[in-house]
Amino acid sequence: MSSPRPSFSLSVTPLVGPLSERRELRVRGAVPGSLVTVRAVTPRDGGDWAAQATFLADREGTVDAAAHPPVSGDYRVADAMGLLWSQRREPGTTGSAEPSDVDAPIVTTVTAWSEPGTGHLDVDAEGAVAAHDSVDVVQWLRADDVSRTEIRADGLVGTLFRPALSGSLPTVIVLNGSGGGINEARAAQYASRGIQALALGYFRASGLPDHISRTPLEYFERALRYVAVELDPAGGRAIVSGQSRGGELSLLLAATFPDLVLASVPFVPGAFVFGAQGAADPAEGWSGPTWTRDGKPLEHLWHDNAGVTWQPWNDEPPPTRHRDVYIDGLHDRELARASRIPIENFAGPVLCVSGLDDRAWPSSMASRIVLDTLERHGHTAERLHLDYADAGHGITLPHLPSTDIERTHPVSGVRYSNGGTPRGIAAASADSFEQVCAFIHRTAVPASAEGRTIPRNEGR
Image (cartoon, rainbow, N blue to C red; front, side):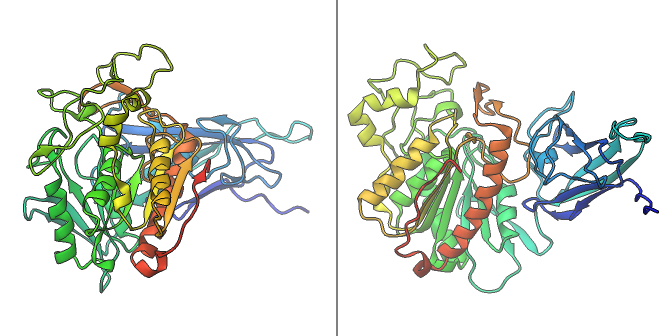
């Protein structure tokens, strides 16, 4: 006599944990060979995001989302996190999926149900009957033992996240891109991994300018000195890490203030100083300067560039589908030489994160230029390139929805594409977070990184 089948049940493990933690999702007690649908709904800023997938139960009546790809739904690969990264806006939902309040947990309701009548058709047995189960999954951003302190010193505007650990800690300055603001979410997640993180604003935050135009590098020099003097960073200096324009800035700061920077971790960076582009003050426009030093604008690639006859930041399409302003701009060799970030000035470790399908700007090319320049100049510290084949410009925190590829720029209002695929972006976001955390920890002991050279991880 066979054992009775267990009742239909859904489990997600762990139910509560940090945003960066992978979960397991299983359904048990389904009719063998039947179809089971699972739906995940998450209230985020601006409304609900949701994803749904249908699975084929195995001969034991189980579904393991990490091992079984869906047969229908919003994604089609075996991935227990698929119901999170494949989420899309529900009707009426606006805004971004990126969290703005690090103290508000992200709560996702996951519901599984059997599809009635389904099951093996080559046996004399009844199909599945209606059954369902539901659980709430909680992802938190700031751990209970991580302190959050607003920094308003020496003109700086930022938020410090520090784990409840004694002694010097690896310390990173987190910089946002052309959307501005303060990236507290990433800083809070770094702190959950034992990393002290200062999320530093430099425009579009309270008390700061509304645009990126003419941002003085002296502001960041003060921040670097503040970290060194006030925050007791491991290694004596800050690691700088930013996204997009913040990636460009991470390299620029390392090249400009090499004695104040321990390591540079640019996400989807540029290898040149660019004009203000989509985050520009309208009074100066896209080709106005972004950065200044000693009150003087840094030379940039859009300053009367002889090779550029058009620009993509006015919501108009390029002249042909093969035109790329970032390639056209390099035709003006003298200007390109003058606006290149002289990263060879920096002797510390460098980790570049890029997407091979970056459609916002060529971050993979920029990363290769940077790391090749370092190698040719005899750089001996660690160099690491995480170059993801199916990712674009939107590599972000792990396990957030990665479907929002076509964007409207938050400053200019211009439409653009980040590139990549949802699955590729999700994989890059999860993998890069883990690798960057490990890099930060080993970099905090400079001797451990000395002499290490790690080849580019192309196509991961």
